[in-house]
Amino acid sequence: MKVDGGLRPDEIIGLHIKQETTAVKENRTKSDRSKGVFPSGRSASTTESRLPGVILDGHRALRELVLVNGLRIFAEMLEEDRTLLCGPRHRPSPDRRAYRHGHDDGNLVFGGRKIRVKRPRIRTLEGEELELPTWRRMSAEDPLRERVFQQILGGVSSRGYDASLEPLPDEIASRATRRSSVSRRFIAQTTEQTRAFLSRSLEGLDLPVILVDGTCLGDYVMLVAMGIDASGEKHILGVAVGTTESEQACRALFRNLIERGLVVERARLFVIDGGKGLRKAIRTTFGAWAVVQRCQIHKLRNVVGHLPKHRHAWVKSAMRQAWKLGTEAKAKHRLLQIAGQLEAEHPDAAASIKEGLDETLTVIRLGLGGWLLKTLRSTNPIENLQGAIKRIVRNVKRWRGGSMALRWCVTAMAQAQKNFRRVKGHREMPQLVAALEVLITKEENLLDKKEQVA
Image (cartoon, rainbow, N blue to C red; front, side, top):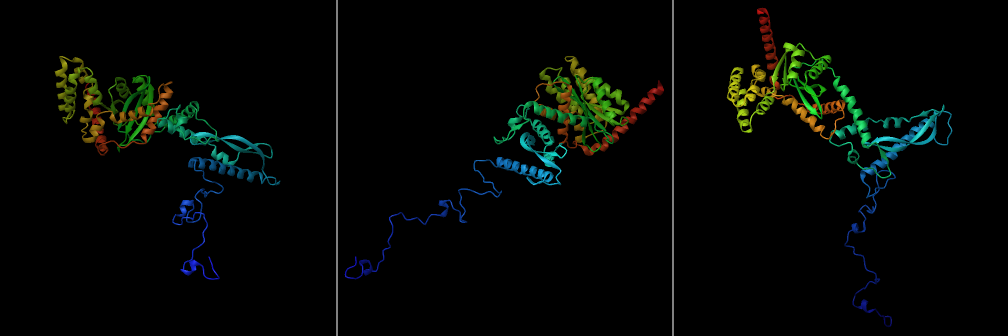
């Protein structure tokens, strides 16, 4: 209060009290971030996309955003094509080559399915339908076939194919994911692949070793032939369908290989499981050029199949030790001793040891050792291939004919072949080739002497 023109009380004591309103004063110690403002001054409530005209929605997945805007760009590309052919809208041009004819529903392959897209239509000046260049490039079905093929090989069933794909936005309609559509595309893809695979030329392949074995797919026996070249690389040669490993089925397989370029007049080692039909087909087709090695693992299984369980371990150990003795004579002598010990109580087991005994010793007769001996003493290299076949066809529950079994078998083999490596002991392959030539020459000379005596 001011009295008689004097100073106010606050001025007397040297203070100046600032007049303030009753509103709560802003706390300046808080950061600007509490108000949703970045230091640059841009609001944090919405984020502008770098794509022109597109606002990112926090609740929309990036994939859906890319898909929707990608389709928008695709529609613009189609319209550009139409403008180039028909000219700008509402501007008559004497140089135009076509005219607009509305839109139609079209289908494009996307993400393992077909999606429905509005397709601009144009017609030539003569009234014929004309396809837009961009649409022609994008509408091929090849990507869909390949996607179906890879999904099924990966273990997805035809019924579960649709569920294996990423979902689409609700506004985009899709098709070609039902079981029947998936099956048709897989059959078409594998039929072409089977035809090409089984017609490959074998000319120029030097194959001193061929392994042949059968695997069952339902009621069908798939006879598979695999070759090993002089450098140790493995090659799937062919496959034949039968109900058993009969001589006729095996000869049909060999005829196919010869027609495609396999050389007959070449010293060659055949590794087989011991089937009589297969052995006879080899002798009939390749004659004296073929040297046969019976699978030692199959021989063991056959022998112990005639024995009680408590004798299995001893017989397996004794036969394996015999095959490791280093020379053909020692191994044969020991195996005959084992057969003699089993003769009284287990004559069938003894007969199984003696049956084809010499052919279980072929790799020893050839002087092989180390890893190559372990590799070629059995059909394990081709049985690994059969394991891959079983893995890929594991979802097939019903085989509807031999052609279906053949398609699946060839498809599985083609996939397995991509992961092939050279056989263990491949550095010793030159020694095997030389030993085969020497053995064949000896057998030919012996045969000539027998003929002269006769």
